[in-house]
Length: 227
Image 1 (cartoon, one colour):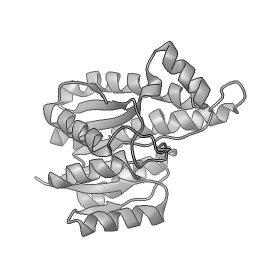
Image 2: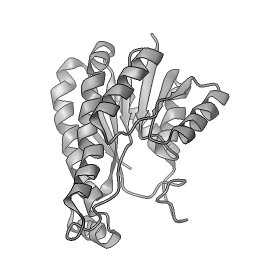
Image 3: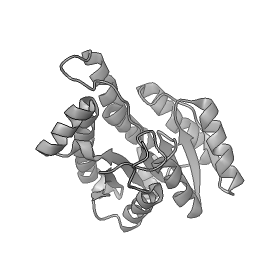
Image 4: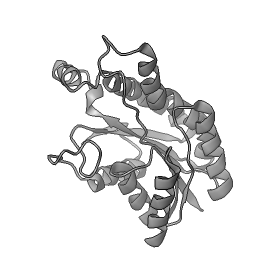
């Protein structure tokens, strides 16, 4: 049976490594992100490595654009076996001064659009006993030291969105378990080499995180893994 993974929020780092890991296992790769030019170049590079990859430009901060991307992937590559959510938005770094609308944008990309994507892909995921795989960040952990880091780094909005996403993964996992759909997340607690967060001191390899996603996908037991 043909298998397709849709990678939402595709870019360098984790999502690119996930694409290659799942592509090596025979998955068709649907790449979704806002920048059409960079997305097309990424798809071409993956095709050159022997993978079936196609680009689907979309603004994942918009619910209708997110739903449309799912429909386009289904029409082009067939039913969706796995949905990987790697999208996030910056903004609302200082909650005492940021316009409240900034926080809504951060939250919508992390949570609202993820829910919309799951709903749109759910018939396929149920039929294929598929999976929802979520990239999350350590800033969402409930810990006073982590809260202090979010304040110091000016990432307060992202910290709140990550915490909400953590709860979303848990409740979706509980809701969809009976339907045979696996839901899990990898919580990244360091800096990934080759990403926008890498200032030269990154301590995590994207391939390590991609391997953890593949492990979760195969084992389908743990809801969360920390890297």
